[in-house]
Image 1 (tube, rainbow, N blue to C red):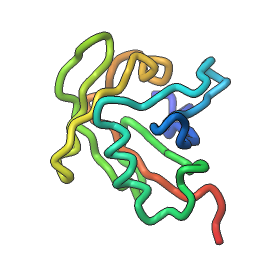
Image 2: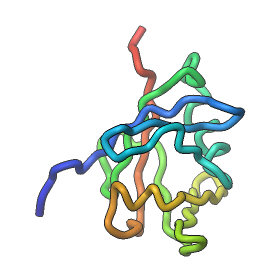
Image 3: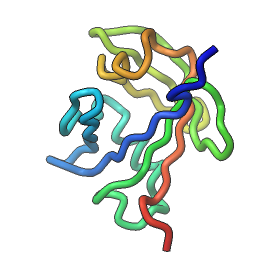
Image 4: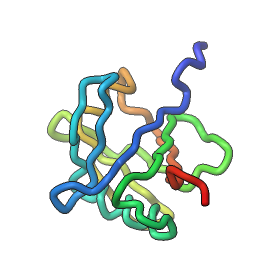
Length: 119
């Protein structure tokens, strides 16, 4: 089993009243989070000062030390995948950009939001 890219890192920020991210490595620019995911992010970054200007989001299909969120795959729809955050009673849709990081939608996703710079 290859451990390359076991944990992915992106830097979401606010643009046009929603969370977006850039990842030139996979050809994404201002890729928006939609359909429930922005609300999940709002909860995750509630204690991160100035998160709207950018924060580090780590995510993986396997648990890692300090993860904040466990998302469970619910169903596929519109070429994307719905996930449930059971602990927060929320659902959100991840668009087909997910498949730039995974060959198929993982059964579980784990995530953690961190400030870009420690104070």
